[in-house]
Length: 584
Image 1: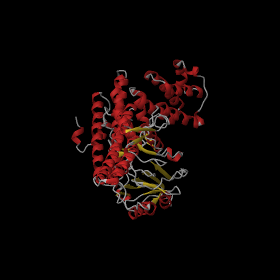
Image 2: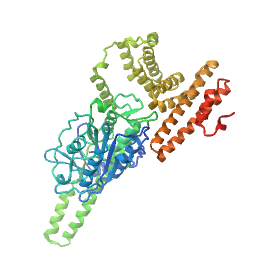
Image 3: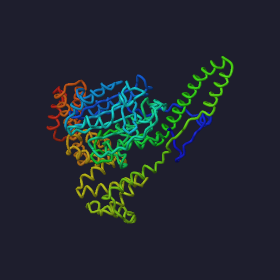
Image 4: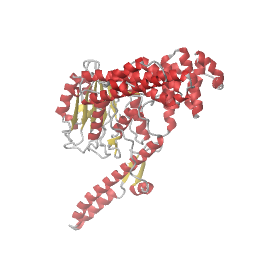
C-alpha cells in the first residue's frame, strides 16, 4: 500500500522495518495547500454540492473527510466563485439528505454551467461492479441498501445539458482511509469507467479497489491534498512541461495521478482524456505557485511511508493487547481452556507483519510520458537532421524574417527540451519567439513568450514590456497578468539605453501601469455594483488605491521628464477621491 520496488510486494516483519527506519524523523512539514486561491470572475452558472462524511453511525471513521470537504468547499467558494445560493456544504449526510441536495442543486445549475459534486467518505462496490457512495446511516449488513449509486447521480443531474463533475475521494474496496478494514464483506471488482461523455466527468481517487490513503502530516487525504496543491499552480504545465499561467482540468488530473505515484501510492486516480475536458481551464493567474521540488516530494514520500507504517504497527499491537487481556482471563481459569487460548494467541500474532507496497519514482518516466503524448499528436511530429540547428547565429536572419522551416523549428524545440544550460535555453527560445513574432503567428508567440518568461528568463525589459502590451490589448481578463509583467519591466528598465529613448519608453511604461490599474479598478467597481459583499468591497478599495498610486507615479515621472502631463493628471483625478492629491 505504501511502496513498490519494481513489481515485488514485500512482507516485512515489524522488527525489520523498525531497524530500517527507526533513526529517521516521522515529522516532515508538507507544503501548505490552503487557503485556495481567489478567482477573478464571479461564477453565475455553476452549482456545487460538497459532502464530508467522517463520523459514520455503524462504520469506522473516514479520517480527515471533514478537512478535505472543508477545503474543497473553500475552493468552490473562493476559486470557482460559486454563489452561496447555488452551493451547499454537508457534513455527515444521510441518504435522504444527500438525495435532496442532488435534486435541489441540480435545478440551480445553469443550462451552460457545471454542477460540481465532491464526496469524501466511504465507498462500496456491489456484486455487479456498481460503485456506491455511503451516507453516514449506511447499514454495515447491507451497504447497498442505503448507498447512492454513481450512475444514478449522473442520470439525476444531467438532464438539461449542463456538465456534471463528480469528484470522489473514497475507496471502493473493503479498506478505509486509514488502511484498516471497514467491512468483512468480500471485495468486489468495480466496472471500468467509460469516460466518453465530456459532460459527465467522474474523477475517482482510485479506479480499482485501492483505498484513498491519508496524509497525516497534512491532515488531508493524499488525493485531495494534491488536488488542492495542483489548483494553486503545482499542476501548471504537467502535460507539456511548459507552464502557461493556467491550470487546466487535464493538467490537474494528470498531476494528481503522477504525484500519487511519486509519493509512493499505487492508486490509479482517473484521468478523463477528452479535449473538451483536458483543455478546460480551472484556475488562471500570473502568480500561480511553483511546484515543490522532486527532493521535497521524496522527503514527503518517506514521511508518509514511515508514519503510515507506524500507525499500522500500533494498530496491530493494540489489537494484540486487547486479545491478550481475554487470553489472560481464560488462563486464570486454569485447565485446557487457558492452554488453548495461549496457543491461539501465538498462532495469530507470532508472525505479525505488514504488507508494504510503494511506488518507486523514476523522473525519466514522466518525461517519457510527456514525449509520448507529443507523438500521439502527429501534427507536431516533424523529421529533421539534428545538424540543421547546430549553428544558432546562422539561423538568426531567418528567424528575424519569420522564415524558419518546420524542420528547423522542430530541431530547435527538441534542443530546448533537452538543453540544461540556461543561456543556451534562452538563445533557443528567443530564436523561436522572434520567428513567430515576424511571422505574426500570435497564438504560438504568446505560448512561447509566456514559457520563456516563466521558466527561462525574465530579465529582458523589451520582452516583458511587449508581452504586457499584448496582454492589455487582448482583453480585460488579462489585465492583471499584464500588470504583473510591467512590474518586471519596471525592475529591469535600467538596461534600456540612456537618453530620449529611455524617457519615452519609461513614460509609456508608467502610462501602461496606470491604465491597467485604472481598468482593473473599474472592473472591481462593476462587480461590486452587481453584488455588494464585504469581500468585493475590499477588492474594490484595494484596486482603487493601486490605481491612485500608479497614476500619481506616472504624473510625477512625466513632470520630472518634462513630458506632457494632461492625460496623467486627468487619470490621477479620476482615481483619487481628493483632487489635492494630484497637485504639485
